[in-house]
Length: 199
Image 1 (cartoon, rainbow, N blue to C red):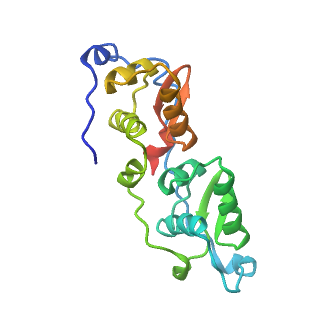
Image 2 (image 1 turned 180 degrees about the vertical axis):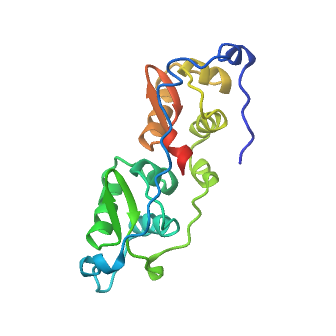
């Protein structure tokens, strides 16, 4: 894990009591559920030769490694590196669903069939996610990881990191993190996406 980024004392002083904004995004309980009953779904599973592309294989491998849990699209996207609202990501999920390999229900996704021959060797640790980000987005994300229950304005983040908040670059960095589902923005306050605390 990269070095922890400490809060500026002046900003810390203003955060002795949580604000209404900081309480506005509650954490949800971890989504856990038993494996599906294979005897009930066997007829729906494609039993021919299956070939998965890289994207579908990576997603399936993550779900395969957590067979007793269900995840949101944001959670899956954050650890696999795909934008959860992107077309490619949803194409991969549709492929896995059509093959009967996953279940999508009530906004969460879980592995349905465990086929070891379809998985790949991937590292789904948070360090891999961080390393794939460019320098400034990585620092922003690390700041939020180190302060997961804090909300920051753009100006506060820029001050902490010693970067300029003006211009299009800073907004581009935030937009990229938002697209990947790593942060949430509400009332001009930026926080770590609380769904990531449940992975």
